[in-house]
Image 1 (cartoon, one colour):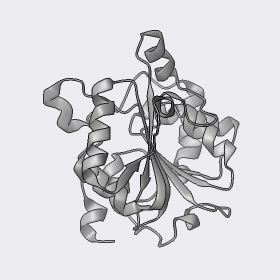
Image 2 (cartoon, rainbow, N blue to C red):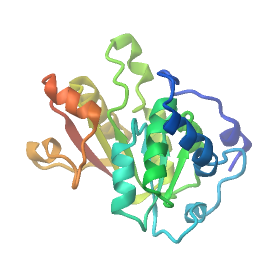
Image 3 (cartoon, one colour):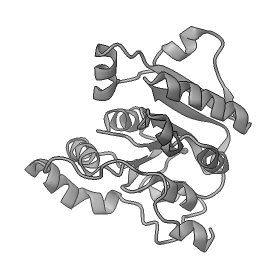
Length: 232
């Protein structure tokens, strides 16, 4: 891992980092658990990411921008033999996940509480089984589209750290971002969209628990799309 990758500054997170004051239970959980859950990006990444976890795992997946952690906590419980890394710079979102972990421990989970590009640049080549990016900030104004996380440079990052055959999953309720992602992955060339009919992208992923944001989008008449791309 090069020094440039370890020291790259924040470049892709433009949202809020703080919301309401944490509840006492959340603040207590964060204080007790987060230091041991966080990855140390100041040290070189291990050649084998499986060693980041205190028990044997059969592979490692990444979720970027996990919000309140509903899906990530659900998946870590479904697949206890898989290691998961979650990224969420928003303090309140991280606190919600850590509070869930306090109630239902997840030894197969590690987290990063800053810009996802820092983590992606830290990871070794071909080290991830998959990447999930669900309901990222859509930056709906055209002048802000350059801030969208799906971009040529970030798809380059995904391609580097993902194993061939790994899955990049993307969900959004914003039509322009869905089309943006389809075009970006098509033009990039390292990712093949897995869909043969409209049902494929209108059907939630297997055992999908939903999120509070998704429920709000559906209530407001914005049906989600669930896209899956395979790393060539």
